[in-house]
Length: 250
Image (tube, rainbow, N blue to C red; front, side, top):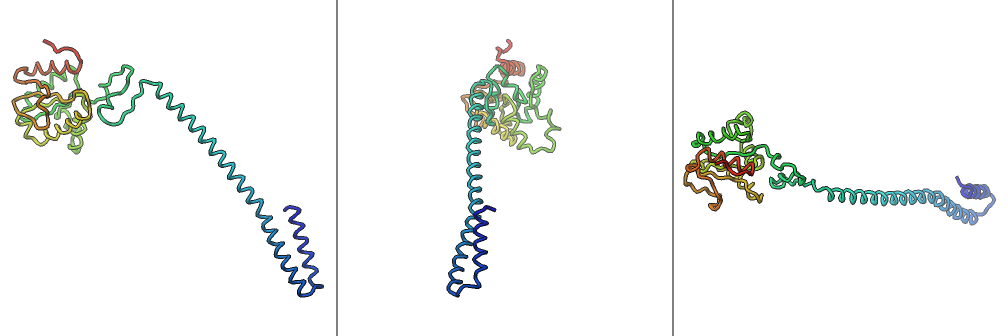
């Protein structure tokens, strides 16, 4: 307790001890003085606490400013280091951006689970299976439904097939026929592939015509292979050339 506070209390005590020899008017005046002294004491005692609180508030504000400055410096430094690294490419989820793994020479195609995904009607399976078998013999990763029966077992096929034909393959080969145009699941696969094709600049859908059927949603200006003219060997050769960038074998 401060000395000034002790002095005030002593003065009040002395005044109270002299009450017995004073008149009523003097007692009243002394009571007013005592009340004023008590108020002064209360203010006097509260002032140090208020002053301490303001001090803490200023210190906290100063620390906050320093922290903001340090954070700002770190963010600037981090931004400059990203800009200096040409191999960093942000992935935003779409297939086109997901392919851009690196600009320093790494293969972008390795990001896909399959090199090709084949989409066909069950009635055309015999023809497609010959092509798939030869592609696999050549080391090509092919999504062919019968090879993934166990993986698809219990899955929601709408979600599973959408992922395959929209995001997991480098190319989708469509074997177009009148049966293909009529089937529900081939329509679903085609729509997923078209969504992917719409979202990227490079080629994705590789059509192979088994007959003269015009397929809804696929532009007639898109170049296709004629299965009747080329046969399985020609389609396999063209697929390998598309994947490697080399000219097809004669």
